[in-house]
Image (cartoon, rainbow, N blue to C red; front, side, top):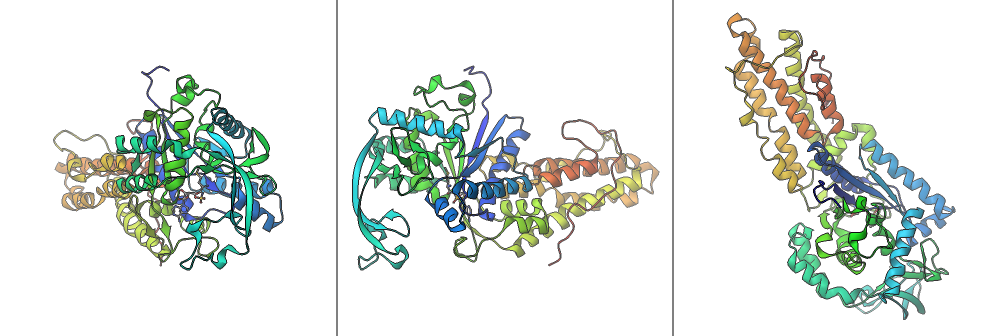
Length: 508
Ligand code: MSP
């Protein structure tokens, strides 16, 4: 690999289960990743943004059975819903991961075979209480205060079953050392602490199979055709299988250059899948297949959107459908709320009323008004043209508050980035009030000042729109169009357009 080459910024999200259609929680994570990806592209970096769907497993097999169609057909439908949603929400991923694809299957089987050959996977017999309804072995964790298994588990029987296990606990010490050495392995800090505590308690190995008699919707184990993989070796491996990883090379230096060029990734996940899936299984899997410590991905853990303090779930029937919101308010309005209504790492309560309030306050009233006002004056007083002003009239940019933007973006505090980008609107409105273009236009000695005020107002809007473009791609381009400015061109030779409302007020 040519080490002089700038690295590609590689960003992933969790892949979404296809046992039920997407809700706003799924949308949040993808928009967050999309904002980061667009920001990096804006800075001129090469970006590889990977997302996709998790199509195997028991939940899907059950949902398909309930719907009375084969799992392959069932996941196709739901996968299509996800693809449609990302398109509607302007989520610009570079590669799409589907875990039923052949490409993925080869990598999963290659890795499993390599670990099996290295003695990292063994067969063992498990005996214990088994819930037929939930199709899983129950442990003491599932027992209630009286030692009983609750009614949610349905009928319970004693079972013996052979399965394959991965020697997870062999790597416990390595993981503890790694987390000790690398303080930003997980962001935010309190999540790294939570992970560290969970690793301390790690004592058992990881069951990685299900007999086909019980589950056949999965990837067959390459060393035993009576079993399929279950389930994390399948799901987690997507992050490398769709990035060009070659499973036959255990020495990372021999991986294809298009893989090395992007790895390691920044991985965005929800708080529910840090422990144990990503923080324990995934990091240990990577370590076991030959990834050195400096090639471990960084995990960015976000909180959850809830509804009235309760978890959103299909079974609870309190899902918020993102398609409905997009049809009602537009994709930018939803993106805006998802980004501004939650702080990094924290949970938030979803409220359609808040979506409308944020939108009206920041976009319709603040930014939208400034844009309409500025364009109207430029058309009225300058026939739609303004020029770079004379040096006697310095720009007001210093007081416009954009300074925090990059710092906040690096801290993934998107809501703060938005405030930084919008922070220009209030002082700009004041700037216009102070200079009173409507008065300047009547004084021929003030020609240059008028030109300068209008020029800087338009140019500040342009800069705010650039900063907002990762969050509001449609609206930002709407602003560029009205300013007759193209992101990849400098200078503006054409006339400003007639203002058209970009953010029509939403009536409550
Ligand atoms: N398929 C697994 C992940 C495998 S990754 C190798 C999964 N799927 S999921 O559909 O349940 O969730 C996908 C992502 O969406 C997760 O990161 C999860 O945290 C996130 N969210 C699901 N519901 C959410 C909210 N209500 N709010 C915010 N994020 C949510 O887990």
